[in-house]
Structures are given as C-alpha cells and as structure tokens.
Length: 93
Image (cartoon, rainbow, N blue to C red; front, top):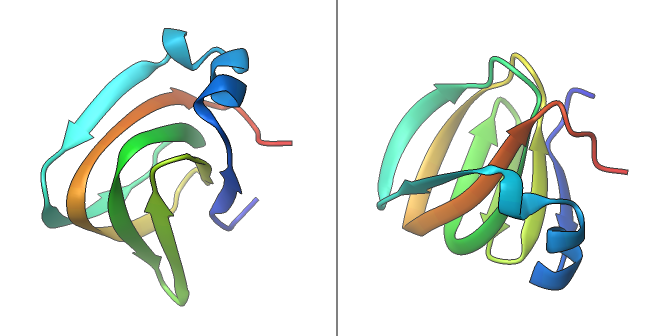
C-alpha cells in the first residue's frame, strides 16, 4: 500500500472497529510537514485537512476512515481543527 486510502464511515460503524480504544490527536489550523513511521489508520471526528504527498492530494474531513502508508512524507494543511482517533498497523478492508 503506497497511497492514502479513504473510506466514508459513520461513527457507529467506526465504533465497531474499536476506535474508542484508539489514541486521540487534535490539531488547530496550521500547515506542517509529516512523515508516517508506521502504517496509521485514523477516524476523523471533526475537521478539514488537505494532505499532499508528492502528486497525491487527499481531502480528509469529518466522517472518514483514513489509512496513511508507512514511510509516506506529506504536508498537512489543516483549515478546520482536526480531532481524530488513530491506531497503527490496522488495514482498511
């Protein structure tokens, strides 16, 4: 898996995946560079961000389950405060 994977999902569906046991991360509007050192999967509770990795641009927002591949270097442009639950090495089916 080399690309960002996005799946729209209700909070009820996400809870069935165990997101209540995942870590929580929040970020105010900002722009920053990031590198994913592990495969990370997250559920977006709120927010709006454009993630750019090379030629790939992903618009990530509330109600999405998103996986970022290990080793991906990207830029986050957070336009609306992000609040997400995340875990490592969970593969979206």
